Length: 334
Image 1 (cartoon, rainbow, N blue to C red):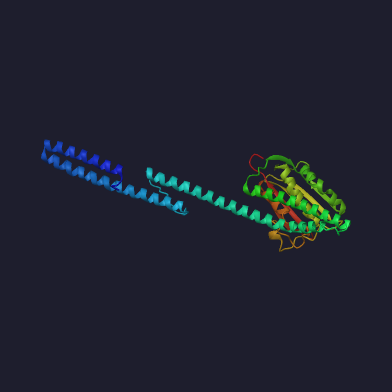
Image 2: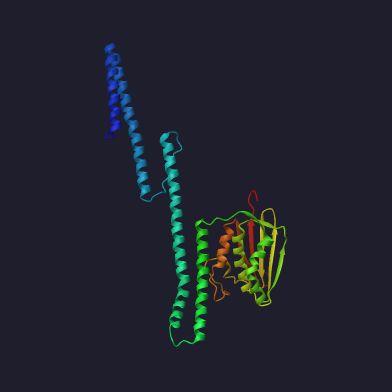
C-alpha cells in the first residue's frame, strides 16, 4: 500500500499538518500540544487502516476482473451496502453478466453455424455423388441417346433439389440467427389459403383428391403473408403426398379473442407414433416418407410459424389421417 504514490503523498500531507498543529498548540500550552499530538497520531493510524481496507477491496476487484478475463464469470460480487465502491461492484457484476450472456449467444451461434454446415454437407453429398457418376457416364461415346436424355433429366432434377435445399437452409439459418424480419400486417386467412393452394392444385387434380374448405371470409390473423404462405405450402404438400388417390383433404380456420387457428387434415395413413415427437425436426424422415423426401419442409414451417408468435402441432385423427393444428396468437394492439 505504501508503494502507492498517492497514499504516500496523502500520509506526508497529514503528518505535516499534524506536526504543525502540535507545534502551535504546544507553544500555547504543553498539555494542549500533547493532546493534539495524540489525536493527530490517532487520525493518521485510522486513515492508514481505512486506506488499507479500501486498498484490499480494490485488490479483490482487480483479482475478480483477472478471473473474468480468464473465463470465470460465475463469481457474484454484488454488494447491497451504500457507497461508491459498492455501486462499482454492482455495476461490474452487471457488465460481467451481460458479457457472459453475449458469450453464450456467440457460442450458440457458432454451434448453429457448425450444425448448418454439417447439414449442408450431409445433404449435398448424395446428389453430388449421383451427378458425378452420371456425368462420367455421359462422357462415354457408347451411351445410347435414350440413356443420355435420362441422365440429363436426372441431373437437372438433382440441381433443382439442391437449389431448393440451399434456399431452405439459408432461410432456416436466418430465422435461427434472428436476422429475418417478419412483417406484422393483417392477413385474411381465406386469401392466404387460396394463395398457398395455387401451386399445389395440379398435384391435387392428378391424384383426384377432394378438398373441403371451412373458412369464414372474415377470419384474420396478424403476420407476414408471404412467409406464412410458404409455411402452409410445405404443410399442404406433405398432406397431399401422404393422401392416396381419391383421398380427402380438409382445411378449417376460425378465430377467437386469443388466437387464430388453422387446421389441416388428410385421409392418409397418419403419422406413426414413433415419428410424432420428431416430425418437425430437421432432416427427419418418418416411416411413410417418400424416397425424394429431404425432411426439411415441416421444420421450416415450424420455424416460420413460431417466429410469428405461433405454434404448430401434429397429431393423428380419430379414424385415419394426419392433422396439423396451427395457432397464431394475438398480441396487444392486434
